[in-house]
Length: 123
Image (cartoon, rainbow, N blue to C red; front, side, top):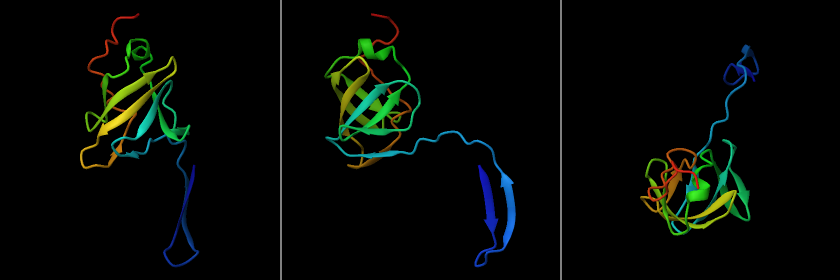
């Protein structure tokens, strides 16, 4: 990445430099209760839209075989509460139940907690 800095109010360039490759940074996603999202099995990828719903990756593939519909799920270290509606081999459909103040800017890729799912024992 190349950065250029100009003097405010002018076109005079005061600095140019090469920063290098920057890592992907996940921006928070806005959600409200009753929203649906897809939690996909896979790498840390940018969130996408799938069938009109936000899709976020989960880097813990071992939870997919053990996850059950109607199980609770928490995101962003407990700030967002959801319930698993459906589990498929490569994704889960999650309904958002609680976001704190009615609307939340959650980071779905961090702090995922499935308290009723045993991810330690393979199925």
